[in-house]
Length: 155
Length: 182
Image (tube, rainbow over all chains, first blue to last red; front, top):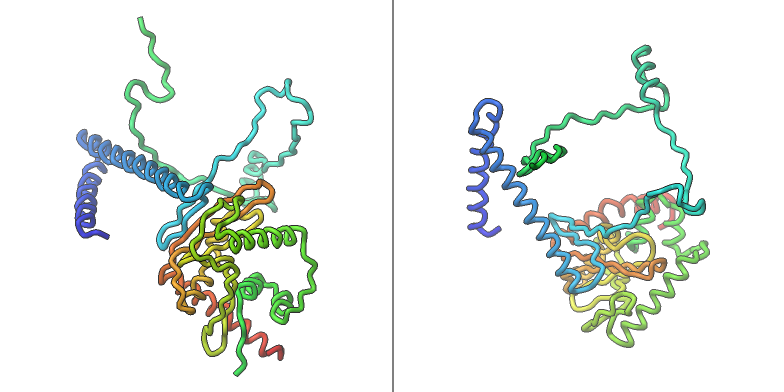
């Protein structure tokens, strides 16, 4: 890597570390929120830049040959997934039978399994347990209104 | 010391556990009737070759790209080490670019992440042919459409090819010796 860029990235990492230290006090100090906001804004900017870059890579690849599918590098795999078309039922009463596929779905009965587990201390045969891990989320508030909040009445 | 002549097909059959087919393939005892897909694939291969030889370009169904000095179906054979030779046929070699043409359901990226094209880069390297880039172009008969993926050849590509051979071939060799096949 270019040494000048290496130096800039190294300095940036140091700055980010300092901000992280301050931002970790979010629920303790008022000023911490601003530091966390700066970090998340930077992350969003960088994500957007990389998204634009990916589009540009595809554009350049397709200028050589259409239907670019991917690139295999020493450190990176770049893959282009093309859009796929799926169909969803919008009004079943209007849909002719030939366009409907009936599927029998079988799911584990969480309620009876939970009761069985509580009673016996084990899972019924043929069932495995999967746990959705705990998750922390932080995002930038929408400028005008909170997401999912009704728009206030205007006079 | 008896030497084995390896190819990507032999190595691939072996890692898939298809020992009987690997033996049949090695001794050219092909008992298998070609499937419809294989017959179609061969016809497409023929059309590609004819276009490359006749017009120095890829057929339109693969994008119609102009080629410089193409060598279709380039067969290369090298000595890997004292136990093994390695042979392969590159679909088309053109001024440092290795083209591999595929048909079927898997897309070009899937093929490119497999070992075959790395082995071809290794063949070029050992044959003193410059290999800078690998391009896999997959043609889907079903959709009448192609897609492509590429990779640049580096020392790592060659190392990976050598490692692949060294991790599979000795087992085949031992088996063949043990069974009196060599």
